[in-house]
Image (cartoon, rainbow, N blue to C red; front, side, top):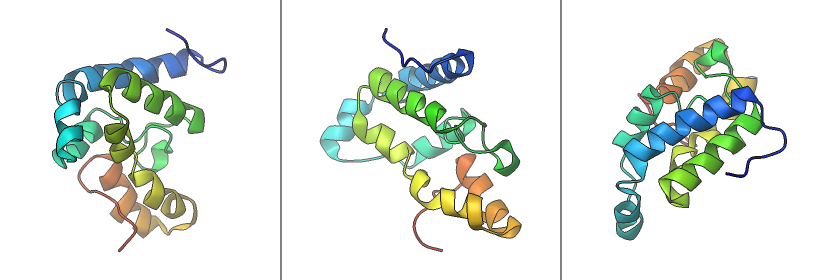
Length: 128
């Protein structure tokens, strides 16, 4: 399997974590979801419990740590193992709403929106 030149042990751990999740939760259903043009909301909960949603977010806000390179590796593995781009994009949709809150929001906003989203208890969107 080809990997990026920047990958180290922390990236390998992310790859293994995402691969396990994708094999169990995504791959068996990916084609049906794609054909039905659906995205199961409950997948966010499963992904949050597996620590997938928090990759690349600071631990201080409920994330798993890492940086953008870890997110790239996670997306690559999700697509590779899960066999679908749509599911990877759907699971990463919180990457639109959360970064501004993480970087410029108040502590109350981070607690209200970021931590619950990364845990899979909430789906963050571009609205309040």
